[in-house]
Length: 255
Ligand code: HEC
Ligand code: HEC
Image 1: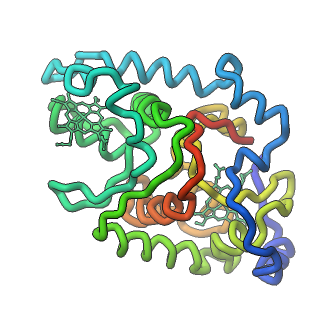
Image 2: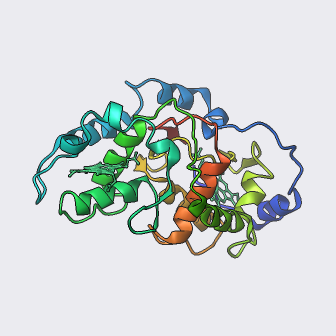
């Protein structure tokens, strides 16, 4: 269920800032009902696994202008892509741009396959990103040490702590100060991006981390950043460094 934030609840969240002790890091998985956890844990019932199969087919596909499959250059994904998801976002060596995993895939799509980039939230981009990230399932998030990322992480943290939108809430007011509390029908998690792209029951579809962030921004009555915006990827970079040590779950399931 979507949280529709009444003003009183917003006020309560502002006031409750800092009540919780700094505790251990927990994935959103740990805040879910046992039935939803079971759905994620069992590959046969996890609806995200369908996209993993689609991603595998796309990995082998040659129907692009260059006629080269991802697999022709990268071989078996379970070897070449293992550990890729634990260290994104990164600063692209050639362009110097901050990119997340889906941007990295789209760079290969454009540069190596001479094809148009896949659209954000398209089934193809979600499936390929999920397929690549799935190869790191069970590995711990280990953000890149590249010093070029520092500035971006700092920007992401500043954004996370800034009050945004008409309710005057920051991301931190919910996710640092109030995890475990209820907001309407939802439990507030710590906002660790461990399981993306993931299948959200409310969406009845796979979605990216950026889609999730847009949902939270809309809930705060803030203008959501467009897909691919620098702010989005800086938030991602901060969230990944904040989640360091937690395991990748892709494809996750969330309520
Ligand atoms: C008013 C409280 C609130 C604020 C403010 C808020 N969120 Fe959330 N967020 C939630 C709730 C509740 C969920 C759980 C999903 C649901 O049911 O809506 C969630 C889910 C998430 C998740 C998904 C975690 C997972 O396990 O997949 C991320 C990431 C996240 N939020 C990031 C952010 C960021 C970044 C901001 C600021 C731009 C933000 N949130 C602002 C309440 C909030
Ligand atoms: C013509 C060869 C070629 C093709 C085809 C290709 N790639 Fe790549 N890919 C590379 C090279 C080379 C790199 C290293 C970065 C660079 O030099 O551009 C890379 C890097 C990557 C990375 C980053 C890995 C890491 O550990 O950081 C991912 C993810 C990726 N490719 C996914 C894909 C996907 C998905 C496809 C198919 C849509 C694809 N690539 C098609 C050559 C290719």
